[in-house]
Picture (spheres, rainbow, N blue to C red):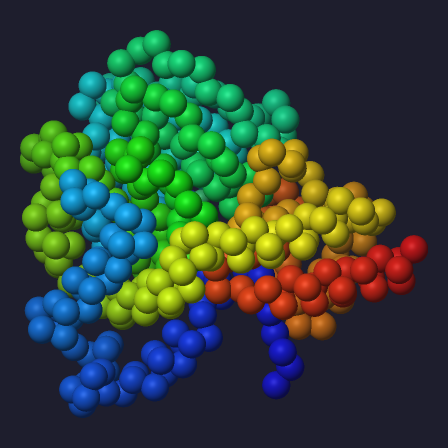
Length: 357
Ligand code: PMP
């Protein structure tokens, strides 16, 4: 089989060793004679793997005891609504607009009755190639929402805004890829399908004091109830939580977030350095705002972009097409993408450039 490198933005590459372990124990989970996809979420097998995944993630992120980790469903997209539903008691919330996904978060928050949704900063004027500076908030907001990494635009918050309101993050595309002072957040949410595991699991990390503020919410949309029931009010995504647990251990063995961040910086550095000297390809993003996990690049000629994407695909570099909203190319360099994927991609780009010149 041809060596393939998967640069997809999500669902995305998972560690080979994890996939092999899933395969090896797929038919009989821990000698049970049953597949992980067949075991009950009330069984001791599940209870054990659930608590192990929860504890390992807690250690990786060095989360203090006053944070709850929830393993939910519905994707990050459900969190766009669930977040204000649970936390916007004053009905006044602040959002930073850094592109497509942050706008979706704003749009959903606006759907709650009586909401004042203030976009307090935006990088729209730069075509979302920057991260805006955030003014000191003068009103009493329920929270300030940021998207730490903008999957489509390829920008990331490398420093966090100072705020008196609880800081909330959609961390879908860079959770566990780089270190943040996680204890500075009131709530973090992320769809799993980039750095954590298969699609179908959403991780929500919430500080205790933000729970229990709103009564009478629909059961499945109530963080407090989900926390009380250890995310198992109904049937949780057993296979996803199991796989996520394996990924968390894989990451721990690599030295945790600090260990993988070093590797991620090396990977992204190779590609950004190449783009900086290339006469054909360039990064549209200002250096200070560049993402470690999603690297968009363009030639400036959509026809040549399409030619490059097709040639790269044939050579085994898969899913390099940029998001349909922005065009061009995008290489997603998530934790499980090996460094040689990037070095060989850069070699390929160099050859393509010579051929095109
Ligand atoms: N936020 C960000 C930053 C994303 O990248 C994505 C998915 N690409 C989403 C939200 C939506 O996630 P989901 O598909 O899990 O709803």
